[in-house]
Image (tube, rainbow, N blue to C red; front, side, top):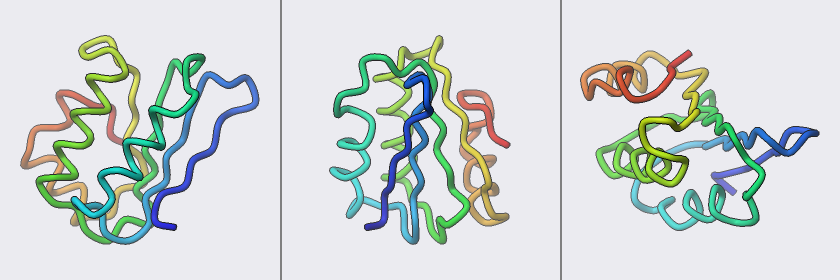
Length: 101
């Protein structure tokens, strides 16, 4: 499965790990990952360490997560990006919307 989730012990942080291509084919799985039974979640971490490709639909999905998590007040961290993924995020000015580590 290209998308895996892990909730912290206190239930307040949800980590979503994306393996392989992050594109429109993962839309429903990505949405399900953050929408299902996550009322206690206060922070989202998107682990991109295994992500090999990211396209414009993936950028849109990250924006949908941001809206879901509270917009400007959302606590979302994008972490472990490879150089190609980080370049796409930088070109798209996502460092102004997300914490990228």
